[in-house]
Amino acid sequence: MKNDISRVKDPVKETHDNIGLSTPCHTKEIPLWLVLLDNIPTLMLFVLGFLIINKLTTAGAVIFAFYTVFSVVWFWARICPYCHHYGTRACPCGYGVISSGLFARKDPKSFQKVFKRNLVVVFPNWFVPLGAAVFLLVTDYSVPVLILTICLCVIGFVIIPAISKLVGCKNCEIKEDCPWMTTNKKHNC
Ligand code: SF4
Image 1 (cartoon, rainbow, N blue to C red):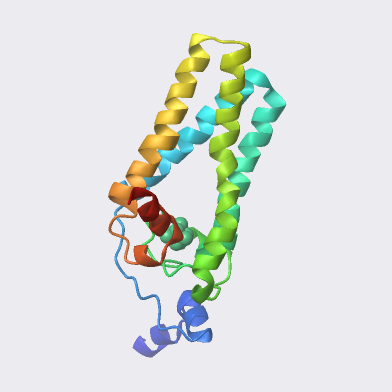
Image 2: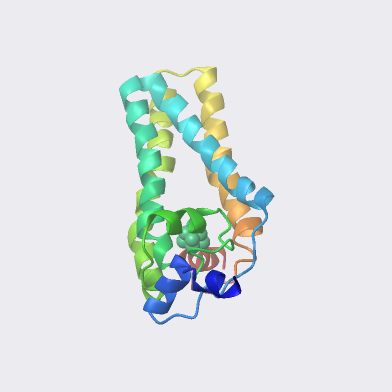
């Protein structure tokens, strides 16, 4: 019986072995509350973005909603497979596990280069709603739009970066290799 179990292949380990890695080297399990803390504000940002753009155009809001999903899947496909947290529960937002279920392992040595090249895909999730909000405030001011804009700015530009910096990424075992954290460091100096 023991021999039967040992013959069952672990696809993540297999792909690591195939590219000459002894990983997963990060075995720490991120608790569920931290994964939720990382994802709920992002989800709120997407909803706020949808509501703001919807004040301008419903078709635009629907396109934005599809884009947010596309950007997350792009992240799973084009960034996470290169990360050392791919296929482990050490990823602060849980993407590493999802990505490994959908996309094949890639060479982690390219992580920094790939991260910098692909991170731009998430920027419209912040800046398109912000642009729409500014446009609405200038051309058709209303208190509801002002409230939505304040919520968007607080969540997108204060809460999400603060969670990353103070909780999610703070204790990450690979933060010294992560362009997100090293970029923040440069700006904070
Ligand atoms: S730490 Fe970032 S890049 Fe790595 S698996 Fe998680 S979400 Fe993807």
